[in-house]
Image (tube, rainbow, N blue to C red; front, top):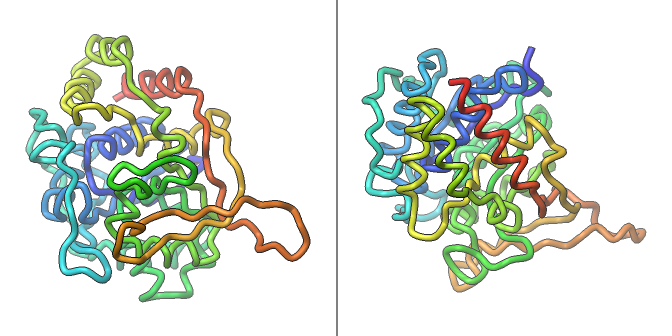
Length: 305
C-alpha cells in the first residue's frame, strides 16, 4: 500500500501538471484517490480540462477528475496567471483528454472521501484553497478526519510574486486560505520561501528531453513556462510526501490578511518561541530545499511514465 492517500486539489498550470505527473509516477509512496480542480491559474473550465489532459498523457484513465469552484468565496470572479500560456499548460501539444469529467462536484467529493476514510486522506491544495475551505464550511465535522494538509501557497519571509507581500494562490482567495489555516488541521506550507529555490536548469531540461516521449513533453512545457520564473513550485508538495529529507523548515502560526488592499493575501507568520503562554504553532513552514536532489528525484520519476 502507498504511504499517502491524497486528493490533489489543483488549477493546472504548468507546475501543477508536473506535480500531478510526479504523484502518478510514485505509486509506492502516493495513491491519488482523486483530482479536484479549482479556478486559479486559468478559469475552471480550462483547469478541469487540463487535469484530464495530464491524466490522459500519463495513461491514467483510472484517476477520477472533479470540477470544483469556479470563483473565489467572496468575489464574483478571480484573476488568472498569464505566465502559464493561453491554455495553462504553456500551449504545449498535449493530447485531447479521454479521461471523463466526473458528475460529482469537487467539494462533495472531498467531503465524501474524507468522511469514508477518517484519518487516512491527505489534502494537497496546490492552487487557491476555495474547494478545501468550502468543504470545511459545508461539513465542519470533516476537519478532524483529515490526516493533514500539505499545500503550496504564501510567502512567509520573502516578497510575493503578485504583489510585494502576496503569493498568487493566497492572493486569489485569501478568505478561503484563512478558513483552511484556522481549521486546526496539521499542515505543511510550501511558500515562495522554499519553492523559489526549486529552480529548473538547462541540464535538467535537456535530460528530460532525451528520456522518452513523456519527459520530453514535460521539458517542452516547462520551457514555455513564463519569462523568468521556471521554478517548480507545486511539485515540492509531492516531493515532500515522497522524501521529506529533501526539505527543512520552521514551526509557526500562520495567518492570512483578507483586507482587499495592498496587503491582500499576505501571510503573517509568528515563529514558535517555546515561551509559556505563546500560541501553539499550527503549521510547519518549509524554508529550504536540496534542489539538486529534488531535480534528480523528479527526473527519475518522470522517466517511469
